[in-house]
Length: 195
Figure (cartoon, rainbow, N blue to C red):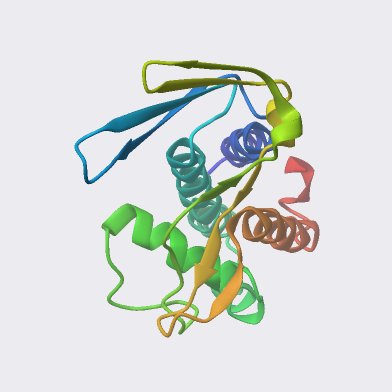
């Protein structure tokens, strides 16, 4: 494993994290069906869908967790103890939860839990208020809403343990996990050049 490969992965992770912070123009549709057979289509222009945000969170978690394997391979390549990476992860608060989220995203289910909590994301909640609406157009059971500032939309992605207890928000988990990896890398004289 070359330093350049680790640096490329770190740049990918930084790009994914930045993308999650910047709300790209997108259109989100919500459909409501009522008992009387009628329905309403809500279209939010300039608003990334909760599913898209959730997909990006899970993708970022997988790449962020894969940094563990890159670091272990680098330490092996320079004849250093790769078990340092595992010991470090076990001493961290956020990385074991990240492992659960990434492994669940990759495999669909967890048989073993790195955190011991079987951490899981169940939903992404999109919140906005009416003051960010630029235009409202109601036509034939279709409601079109143009979001003036997509960055003013908030997303909550709660992570819970196997008992339903709240652990943290996924967006915060990604940032804190990346910080924990950077702390580890800074401690490694033969790797820290990638930062």
